[in-house]
Amino acid sequence: MNTGDLLAELLIAHGVEHVFGAIGGQGYPLNDALHRRRGKAQHIAVRDERSSAYAADGYARVSGKVGVCDAAFGVGVLKLPSGMAEAYNSSIPVLGILSNAPRDWMVWNERGCTAQGVEQVSPFTPLTKGTFRVTTQNSLPDTVRYSFQLASAGRPGPVVFDIPADVFKEDWDESAVKVVSSPRAGRFPAWRAHPDPADVADVARVLENAERPVLVAGGGVALSQAWDALRSLAEQLQIPVATTISGKGVFPDDHPLAIGVMGGQYGSEAANQVVAAADAVFLVGMKSSQQVTSAWTQPTETQTVVHLDVDPAEVGKVFPVEAGMVADARAGLEALAAACADCRPERGVWLDQVNVFKRQWQDVIEAEMNDVGTPIRPQHLMHHIQVRLNPEDIVVSDASFSVGWVGTYLRALRGGQRFLFPRGLATMGFGVPAAIGARFAQPEGKIVVVVGDGSVTYAIGELAVLAKYGLDITVVVLNNSCLGYSKISEMLNYSADYEEVDFPDTDFAMIARGFGCEGLSVREPAELGPALHTAFTTAGPVLLDVRVDPWQTPELDLRRRLATLQE
Image 1 (cartoon, one colour):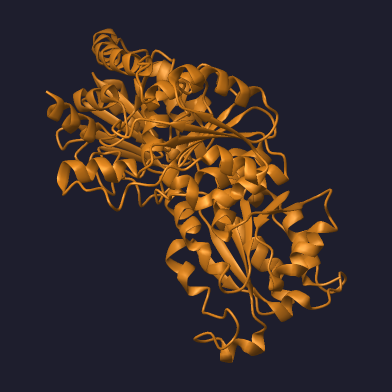
Image 2 (tube, rainbow, N blue to C red; image 1 turned 120 degrees about the horizontal axis):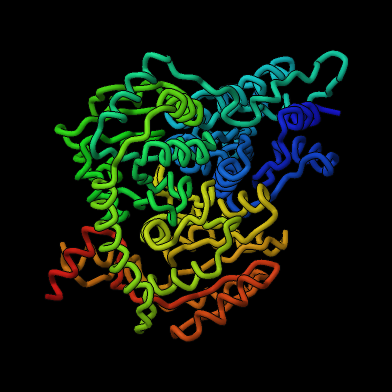
């Protein structure tokens, strides 16, 4: 046995069942060791190393465990940074294992003197919670143990470590180098931070005294698996709940207190109106990002802000707070519920106003979803997806307009991590590989990927992975033969020749069949129902190539501007 066997045992000891990557020479010891431990852990081969990190990310979000990926020396490793940046900005625990050249090659590892050689660790320094070099076999157990602990503790995030080829191939004596682990660190949150009681009392006082409070739940609520605590507190205090895009799914959209996704780009007009009308805004597990807060204009300086986050640097980072709590989201919400046990505020007038905003926006959304015009409206496509979704199903969105179609037009049917979005870096190419990770994390239920024709080409090779492993994943391609966001923006703001944003007509259904998946083409609204029925009843990978109207947009500002042009 060699160091690859030691590493495989260390991973298994931390609860790892799947490692996503593209096999390369320097990493063969780990791949071989996992192959010989097939009943305990499995290496899942993707077609592009960029997909390794996205698959590990999707696996982590759904499983509640640290996602693990690996990449081969040089060219493979340098495809991981975009995925690690997505995980870093979205606070997703991903462990990246980097294979490197032998240690005595390092002196030559410059400007391609060693084949594929490059300094490969430093690019990850600003994109991860930690980077480590494993220079001896003896140091590997503690490096792995601490990497898991760092990835899953506090605010989660990615960690990478680098192993030279000669260390990887070194013989392993089990009696000399022991397998040490912190199994609890393989899941997240590894440990739940509880709030200061004085801070709980301060936040509780603000919420109890507010006349028009609103709660905005971010991705931290999903990471904490705090959806039950969120619902309980909202019902107890009668507080309407908005979510960020990353938080979508943590509160069921059919709940009377649900107001949808907040955000100036992709979101619900009702949620934005409610937040604007509130006198107190309670931010939970959210980083106050640009798009959610309409470039940091909501909440306003006249509103009272309270903030709960596991990261003390986030509390009051953008918006000054009247009160704050540093804690895990679930622990914090449960502590607040206990502190407010005797509080039953009367908020009928406020909730009546909230319901007016909700009805007005819902009328708009329902009219669009029922529009059977041609070309097919993406809104109408979302209607057909919605009626087939079950509570246990998972929807994975790729970047750009797909985020808005899914985030605004599909409903969360229960609290949980049922929606996956690439909001950390808005990375095109996230959808299909993230769904691969999600599928291995949750074998039951349906997984649906919504992706544009621009984004799907970034990871088109991963269709072969769906076929290879027989993964029950439905990929819905919004095919408008262009980069939709760029085309509409160019028309509104620049010279509209569309030379750079229009695509030649592409038959993605044929491409899917070439990779071994079922491929279906949809051209007319009447074809949507039968095609989606086939997709949802087929036990295996299916791609739907849906030709949609290129002039439809879910972005609120672009919608307003297009409407003005049509008047």
